[in-house]
Amino acid sequence: MSRKFWKVGAYALGCAVLLVAGLVLRALWVIDRDYGAVAMPPIAADTSPLGVQRGELMFQSLCMECHGGRDGRATGKRLDEVPAFLGTFYSANLAHPERGVRRRSDAEIARVLRFGVLPDGRLSPVMSGFGKLGDADVAAILGYMRSGALAFEPAGFAQPPSTLTLTGAVILTYVAGMKVEGLASGVPVPRKAASVEYGRYMAQAMDCVGCHTAGFGSEKMQEPRAFAGGFELTDPTGAKIYTKNITFDAETGIGRWSLADFERAVTRGVTPDGYLVRKPMPLFSRLDHTDVAAIYAFLQTMPKIESPNKPGGHKLSKASPGDAPEQLFVNVGCAACHGKSGPHRDKLAGSLAKSDAEVAAWILDPQAIRPGSAMPSFRHALDPAQAEGLARYVREIAKQNGG
Image (cartoon, helix red, strand yellow):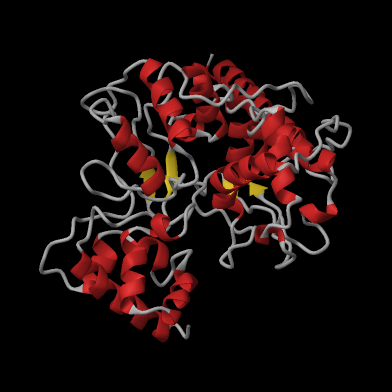
């Protein structure tokens, strides 16, 4: 009896091992096989002034957060915000002299945006999630790439290929349902208006639903807990951080936020209680009032979900009148981006060409000086005297960095 039991157990274990091995091998095959035969979308660049303007908004809001290098060009980087258990991810250098977008056809780039299929036929696990972009917005992004924008001026080196862990391969293949399918063309963009329809489109196009919905499903808009937050990411300091509940639940979501509160958080990076919106949440400073009002209107139609926000990320504290500049630099959130190991440490060098007053004005409201800046506003966190003290401290750091 005992011997028979062990034989059955060993057989069951062997079957389980073979099943798991088969699933893993299939996941690797799905990711690594050649997708060169996938259709090239017949979408051409929209180089009209309005097309380029829309393309700049879409690219700078949606793409630059991942592809932006330290020099302000789309030279790519390691995507440290992706949890390590999925793998090591790099964004491509879109400004590469030989392999950048200037060397690619409209159809090749459109295929990356629509299906995630790279020009060499490989599948990009990250880019395969942007198939909801409408044809007109794909054409607009292409138009911006063809406009001579500084972001694509030849520079930098080719980034390494992304590598998935076995766990990442299985999750992306079976849980996220990563597929290369959909229309090559014919995907509409709703008329721009402060409407629920346009807001739904923008919530998908800007990937609000992808980040603010836990899990790895391919159709997160249909998830019962869509927009309730809880998706794990990594902040610039390397700490785990979880996305927030942006349903209109009054206690745990944004149900008490006015449209003005929501717009300030999205475009200025400041919550109603005066804290910064923490990275890796992008700052959508290029979205206009209509864009934001549409997303706000759409979120109001989604189910209100009670889901307390998980603690995590670089801890922030409100400024106190007696705080020294070095305390402010850490407490209000500057260090996360501009600290010793921060992704934007080198950008402090730009402060050396400015006066303390100019740097302080920039700290308080960068969008007022340079519309579309990716830096959040500190106008609700600091008073002018604190901003000027912080400006002097920042310039000292820049000198020590050799700026």
